Length: 141
Image (cartoon, rainbow, N blue to C red):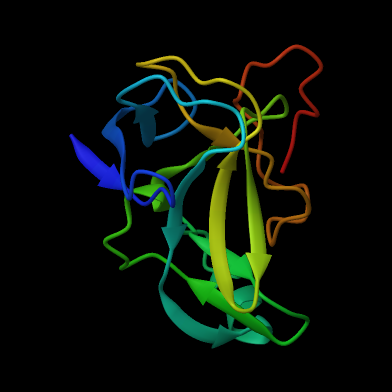
């Protein structure tokens, strides 16, 4: 069991385990109320141009754009939230504010439920098949 940051309690219990969506995922270790700050994501600051170059390499990405010119590569981060998978019907959202990347619950999340976000527009430019399995899945990232 890992712990992710929450402003009210300081920590939300999460577990990292195999995901039916892709690789590993982050799963709620306890009931999480809507609006709860789930955790933070940190990593190496890189240019968006470098992020796009890395996307072309075809390896697993953990990138979040902070601005039109800067991105964070969380590939070597120790934050549990770096394993948050995409869903077309997410239960959480990413918020980028003042250079900080935070995750918030959109609705109540049950213990054992995988925490997911909508990646939105990605560096994959629609070339990566979406495997979220949600009703109404867009089919690609």
